[in-house]
Length: 398
Image (tube, rainbow, N blue to C red; front, top):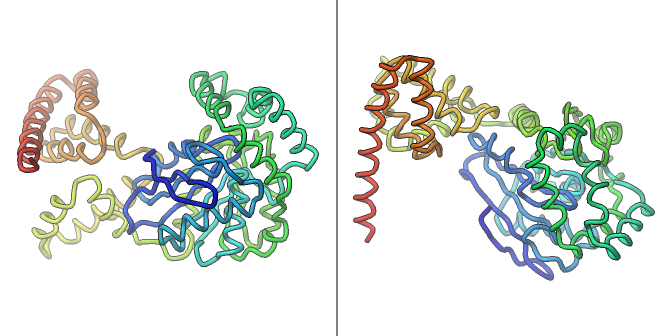
């Protein structure tokens, strides 16, 4: 994440705003003991469709620690961030304590919120006795003393067995959470109760639970959904308390469906044109649009809506993944102009020259050596042209 520091009472919030300002905005709020990095996989999967605002809540990640002992302070922080960035009508997605934060924002400032996505959260989490015990233990012995018990509630039984390296990384994130920030947020959780707030919410709301969540079990999340007027409830199989880490594709799909079905969402043509420009570049699209005639206009509209507005816009694969798959298919089918276009598009999709080389080696095995050889020739030509253009731009910039 880029480091952007927003002054708040008693310190600073680290945040990152990314994506086209013309796209619907999704704001993510993290949970106790985590930071904005937990949303990275979801953001990557949805990067074709939305704009994103992530931040480290007070006392977590790169944000400073002072204060944060009440839920209201955290709500104030997020409202201040949204106001400073001139954000309104955003979709707020909060996990666990972050879910309680976005509930509070929606209650106080409904003008800022278009919809709520509440992940593994509730109006009230735990008991005062539980949080007092947690505060006492962490104060005396540090976060390391409780991390194993916390991780057991965070993840499904299978996750650390099948993903030991990733599990170690997230364990490290928890253990490096500032002790003061962790304790202060525990105090905020101890004293927070949004039951009345949730019963009065009038925004479109999606409530999501992991079927193996040990911190906010499915029954707790479902009860919240029943408390909120007209809220929808969804269960993600194979996930503990952090579906954004364990099942990001499932979570991304639910988020995408919720936003797409809610209120006024951009039509497939507008969505497709946005994705098309992000992949092929505005200069290419502008030329294609300028050359369009009444004869081929229906075909161009069909491609924009179906290829770009439907398939390329889906959350299951990143633009980089779709770019590499498309290059492989164009190489096998011998569509040279399309292949060259998608080689050039790698400058926007993030697919590297080395990844393209590996894909074309795969083509040699499964699609035939002649197809791979021809594709290699075209790729070399296009990369040479791209390098030449880059050199000219660099020279002009001196």
